[in-house]
Length: 371
Image (cartoon, rainbow, N blue to C red; front, side):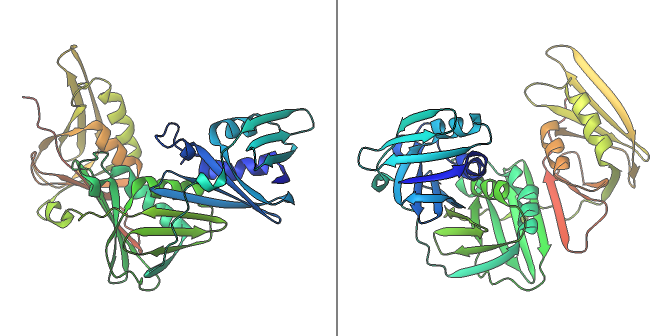
């Protein structure tokens, strides 16, 4: 196969799929990117067997063909090149590859295309169309809170549900939980709940750049199609936990505070918290929130106060500072509301200013206070 292309244009395409390529795999072929040239269109594919991503770019095709190219060496070479025209020439019999520019030549050895795993051919039973900005926002709000514990695979993904004109997305790692309900312009044709791996959603989010996106799925796979990009992923075939049962309904003590002020204050005070628990103590009174931390092992402590509005009796409650900062960083409202019940019950965090088409709650479990 042989084609010429601008290095910067090829780099943009490779950047979309390069993050999926495993750096070390028990199947060395997965450390390659498949090049497939037909006429003037080069299709590039990467896979880790659970997820496959494909993208296309127009090139000046000189000879059609298919070959698997070592991903790391290719990406490192393309990124190091200036914005220049390049010729990619591969002998698909010997798998020898030569990249030529005005100033140099680079030789590498690929693998036979037939060794590269095929992208699953999905026969969809359900299809949904979304605006890419809507999906990007849903991913931003939820994917950060999934579990990384492989013993709880369902919680490593985001639950998607269609609920009476809404698309609901839920994520949890057992310490925090996010439930986002996005009202849709028209009802979604999504008949069953699906759990999509967070890795897949983050990969999709990085590649989205406006327009609409088509979701197709069956019992085993989901496909995201947008622009020239196609992402196919296995669904997580596990029952999602009953998240509704852990969202408290009796939290009637409400504190409202400036989000940026609170994030900055917690970050500073948390520098003096325990390296094990990362605990910060929130002391809430009618007009003042006191954030404090103590590191008993090394003798450090810190305290700050910021203004707030609060409608109940004084309360002290402890949280893992990392979880609270993470949650607040994925909200975009100027003011946020905390709803408490007691120092041992989960706190609920929501934007103080609601949006017409969105309802989001974020729950965080408390840490038992040091006496």
